[in-house]
Image (cartoon, rainbow, N blue to C red; front, top):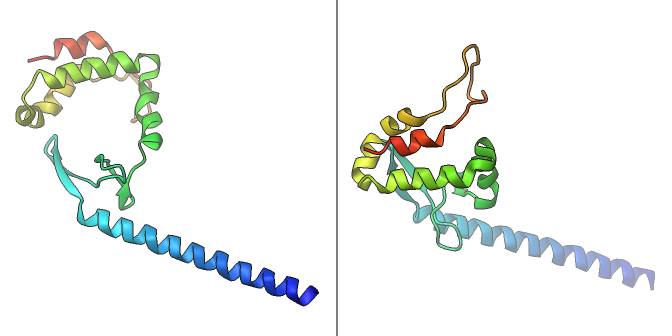
Amino acid sequence: MMARSSLGSHQWRETESSIWKREARERQARAAELKHRVQTIRLLGRDIPVPPAEDGTLRIEDDGKAASARGVQPYINRPFGDCFPEARAAMEALAASVPPEELNRVGLRLYARFRPEVPEGTMGWGAKKKLRLERIVQARM
């Protein structure tokens, strides 16, 4: 009885292992397929690779794969705090006021018009800054 139990256990491990291997091969095949479908979008003078996610939406590339929107969202929201919806709406309105080709050409200059000012004596990307939404509205050309 014991030998049978241990044989059954051994067979289970082989089956479990083969499932993992098959799933790994399937993930690699999907990644290879996506890699061939990667598009490039020109954004503010730079070419950005944007592979499609499994649902067909285009995403920023993260380690050769389409980044998870769930993982990126907090990174984008955090600096804006509670005013994220208003800031996003103001930036979308600003972007919509300029034809796409022109926005690509002048986008950094537009950003320079409303980017938050770093308090004197503070340095670095992580410095706390105050975003003034009225500056985004005023940045329209």
